[in-house]
Image (cartoon, rainbow, N blue to C red; front, side, top):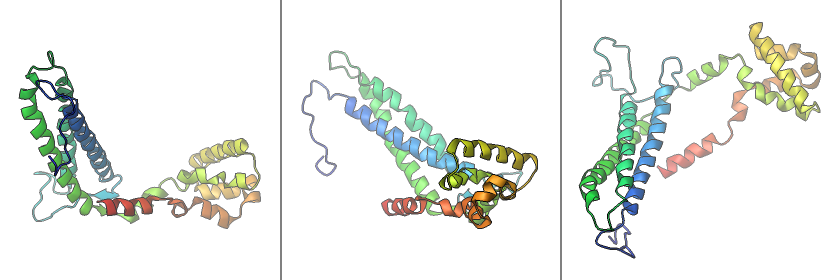
Length: 234
């Protein structure tokens, strides 16, 4: 108990109150849900139409389909998602175990023999799976750039608020950008071209300024710092 920093309960009856066990299993459930969220994001990124991030794939050992050899399914992340749901399901009986008859019945004992070992063993396995996934994650940065280019610059329309810094009215600028966005789509033109053809925009911003505003690399923010911090914590 000392090694695990666990102290004796301050008040107990025939039994120890079960709120502490319910809290423990709830924490396990939240950790499992967070890991499932990570795994779900990777599964989405691995879809062929996105194809920006992938689980590691062992060509000589791994077989994803008996009929479709081209498939590389995110098997590990799928497993994490499935097992995380089991961990979360164990939270319900843990909460039910808080209710006792006169603070002395042992109805929770039979359930806990299953709940506690199952939740911690499954969570331990899920954590080990996700450590492997993150450690060997494959990222296609070129595909990310290709996906960003699909909208021909329209996904960066928010950055054209740079016009406001040039003295234009915020609301009028917002309405103008909506019209230019629709025009870019309907006429199948790159957003940059549509912006340069507009007199209001071209009178306020040079071509170089428009290019800078539409360049996604200029809006990376803090992800690099966050990733480095995450890596250090891991």
